[in-house]
Image (cartoon, rainbow, N blue to C red):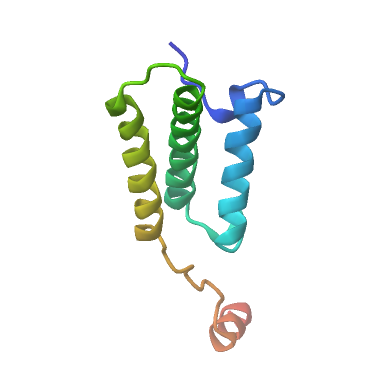
Length: 109
């Protein structure tokens, strides 16, 4: 079985747009995708997926469909835990700029 990712979905579907737009909004709120660690981007995507599942179940219940409260609570809790983890993965970018003295010495050798 091949592993699927968000990029494998038909980008025209409502669920793809909903999840990817939420991921984009959260990344912008946190300073932009390029400022986030890979780990933080992964938990943000997982939180957005849990959010989509939670909203789907909530709307179904509001429409009168019978929903098991546990089935609704699980994505709620997963979403919260993912966003808490996103805060835990708030690594500061490492400065890899060489010092001028080191750069000049290296170039002179």
